[in-house]
Image 1 (cartoon, rainbow, N blue to C red):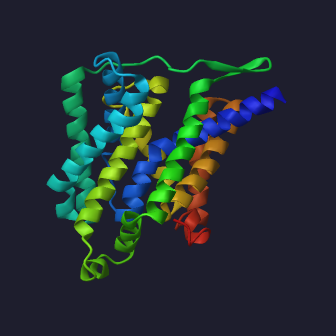
Image 2: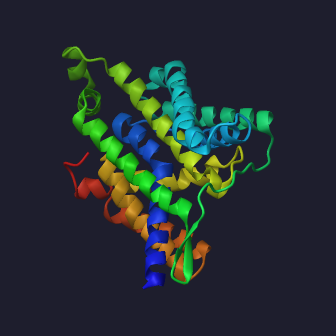
Image 3: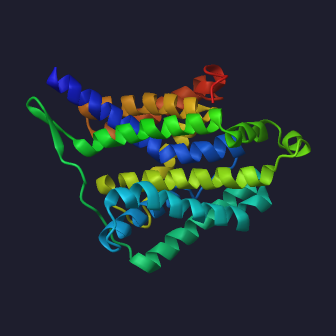
Length: 289
């Protein structure tokens, strides 16, 4: 029973990590149809803000990770949307190339600023004992954080005027403009929100992985796999794909090795996309957010 509890927590932790690395990309891609190749670098920036805020600015880790990192990276996202992205809406390939260029620029800039070595931070929570086993208390926090992110996004998109306008703009931007809305402002705020969520995810994962300027490359593949497999619905799609891939990956990791777990996740994604080319929410949960 104790082992089963530990396994469930580890599976939920794996799901939470997938959520945190991909939810910002899901917001940008699902709401704006923008392929943001710089998403991994937004995660990286969030990690650096959390680490430097804690180690050098004297801030509490929770303030650095949960407030400062999403704020700073969200502002960076707003600036990049104003300078680059807004001029390329409706040109998916051009947007992808532009964000790839932003990605390379961020990697190069951070390498010049901080060097090419891994920077870390101690895990801020102790382990929790479950019978003869122990699990990371920080992993439990990540599970709670992922649930809080979903709850916050649901309330934002379902219960606020911004959420209503954002969903309407996704379906018909011209009609929103004709009714007095401002699609460009909605797009800018949505891109900034996606960047802020990426910053939050990168900051939250920094104690587990450390941060290096090229760490975005290790995040981006899983993030895109999760978002594409989830389909058009931002919350339902991301949650369903994260649950599937996180469970498969962690179970195979326990039974075999972490490498086999990664392979199993990739094979599951290939089979899923072959069976459901429009993603999980293209077939199920069609009316979900």
